[in-house]
Length: 453
Ligand code: 5AD
Ligand code: SF4
Image (cartoon, rainbow, N blue to C red; front, top):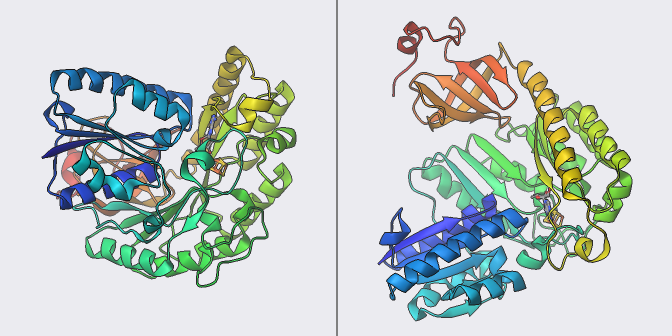
């Protein structure tokens, strides 16, 4: 039997797709790149904004046509969208055979055996599920917790992924060891809010720890000792990003000094309406502590432009905060109304052209600041995890630094960790050379200087 899996959305979904594929492989499935050759097509979906939902809808339309041609084709709608009323309606409309919510992915084998199957449960066994390591990968994900206890008013995730559940530390360490044995040199610890790993129910800065669980700071130190040279983590919530985490990063050489700290807005009024549980002042204090203990750290963020009721002044405050923090990078989004979220119910939307204009200004500012931040690396030696040939072609390889900069290196470096020197910077790339005496020009001689696999 042949399967094809399409993954939308975040790294958690990529990890879940890997788990789904591992289960199917154990049940005898092989995988094909073209859905027209598959007996089973699984679509692992994202519901965080309108765009990924539209993409799923388009794909389901194509798959319905394919099903009309081939009656034996089985189609599954999985992940966050499947959990929502919007997704269930879509499943009916496009005659999908299998629907599994993000908490029910361990049911994939019985689901495909039956052919018609629906489950939206949060299965308790998922907390104790470890997928086998991916084969041949230098970089891997490791989900340490699932779900989210926060109630940010724009966000659909608490409805799709349920409340927070942390995996036992022993299972996480065992999975990290298996990744190391499989040759992985970079592991990214995943969770909607990794900082609240091992915490009891509730939200806020003063949550109790669950008995038998280390804190996230302790877990970082533990994973840091496994021997994988790079340990990363996403995503952090500022309210639980405490000093102990920053100290653990500072003390643990394997942990990359890259912190993704979503701020969402620089206006206290908007943060309150978003129910983010912190103020701009609290957030800036976290950044101050990061800069004190980790002066070389890169910091990135998520920002939403045009949250309902956001005024010009509110937005100016976001730009001011951006200038003050001087983010290395940012993921910027236009507010997208999600059915059933409190923001959609209670606040009036900002006109689309204003949202677009604000996003444009934010993107311009981010480019300016990123360029300045990236230029500060020129002339310095950095470590790059090379993944393979560069997207931009030529005799270049591409990877990323410990600080998560996209790095382009001239030459034939093999996949893995290399030390290089930054020669040039753009807002979203560091162009690097393997030898300080090179320049990043188009001199053919340079190609011969670089190492070959
Ligand atoms: N509209 C726009 N952006 C959103 N995000 C989450 N929900 C929405 C929404 N309704 C963004 C947040 C979050 C990131 C993963 O997606 O910035 O941090
Ligand atoms: Fe959504 Fe807020 Fe939870 Fe992040 S912390 S997943 S933005 S509700």
